Length: 252
Image (cartoon, rainbow, N blue to C red; front, side, top):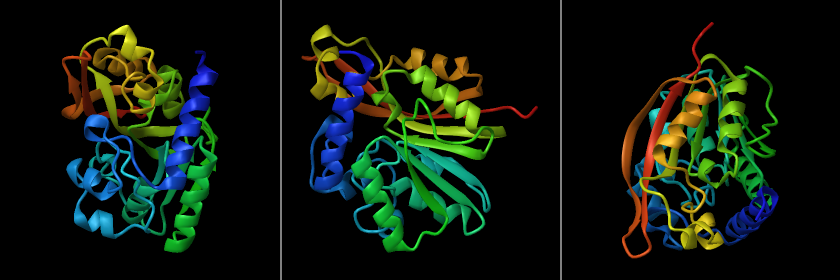
């Protein structure tokens, strides 16, 4: 399938998850009606889970980029593939009323759910924009930190995503992402599976290629600050990890 076909299928799949409120990502790619269990397992605290509006956490992450971002009062944060707004609301608490958080997602159902969650929670410093992470609806050099949680692996053009992240960051800004990467190449039968794609496996890049794409966008000091098993199946030939990556746009 071409890139647009892939995006359509991903959009439809995650649109259904926005409506149902269930997860099919997370450790081992298992569906669960209990997103809190996934979030606890990947690094969110009980305080995190209790501090966001009900329905914001769909359990679709593979790490906790907000915890790594070192967000400060007054900063502007951009979340790539924001879903129902879970990480955006956590970031908003850290940057405070003088800060700002922007969430971008290509799924209309997710954006609608995120906006409703922001309304329910009274988050005046958070906004959600419909758009693709390969073509961000965000101005040049306008944000201090870019975060993303288990989304870039779903993009058929990851290099474009990292170029866009670099474009919108101010000099001295940083990128903090949690994402799925491959430790070994996938067999063709898995690579061609759309079920495996929307489960954050078939679209993932090899770890080295992923880090090279970040460097190729212009980022410096690219560093893996955490890594855990995401999915491993010897029979299917799946060896994937969840990585937390930090990178910087140097000041000029």
